[in-house]
Image (cartoon, rainbow, N blue to C red; front, top):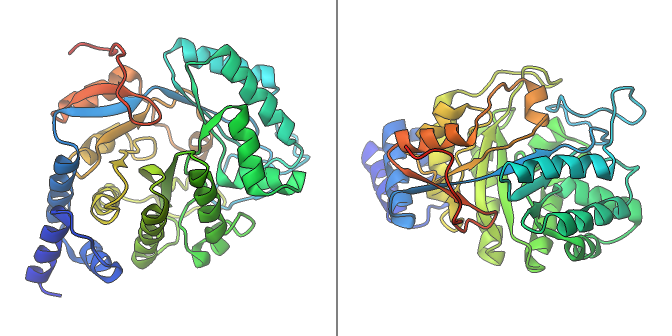
Length: 363
């Protein structure tokens, strides 16, 4: 396809016109990084004008590493009966929540393996107690795989599990477990995990119940360019139907200590995915600069390639860390990166509402 044709497609996307699957794949493959980023930044500036880039004060508590799914890209899980397996007691989780809230956290992500020994009551009691002790904290927790694992153990429908958890205090679902929403890829890297249709089904049900969610993408394992665009496409289709996704969060696979191994994605690859997500996912309002795997400097660059949010502080996290990531950031680090990119930092909540909350730094 000619450079003129690619330029026209970028112009259309920057102006908010929808790209078809074929057009999206062409743009992703053929547009220069500079042109792709410039178009994405133009679109971001229209959707989110002004000087503000948001972030959330949050924590991720990995409450159990016992998992019966055994994904090849995961260095965190331990199979049932493994001597290194653990499950936190509710009081241990509550102690970590208390510490995070003391640091200012308003978003609590409780996420772990698909542990078949944990009953629904474990989560119900835990969420109720978090709500009682820490009413200022939003419980944004559990992956679609964990929800399905609970449903299977209890012989309940996913809808009934979600209704029960919502009544206990679960307010929204993170997008974990999406990886690449293509059957071929999932059979290769996570054959025992729920399939792509099931992931979408759980999200659809949660959104129909009034529980907002986020969407994620773990790229850089074995997927092709076409499969990355397919991932975008199925998310966009569900958003057309439900309008339930608050944000899209792409991050690349960290291979260093996982059974899957492979090579880490490049910074160029990361920026292309960020920019393409802004242009293709025209109905998802927020794109997060997922700095945890690429590092804060690339996360900062993502703010000029279509991202409008810096993600979270992630006060406690083990899954990506055990895969080999060494990136860390304080609130001051996030705010500094935002300012250096030419924006003003602002603290938000889970629902992307800006909060009247003091910043960590004033300059």
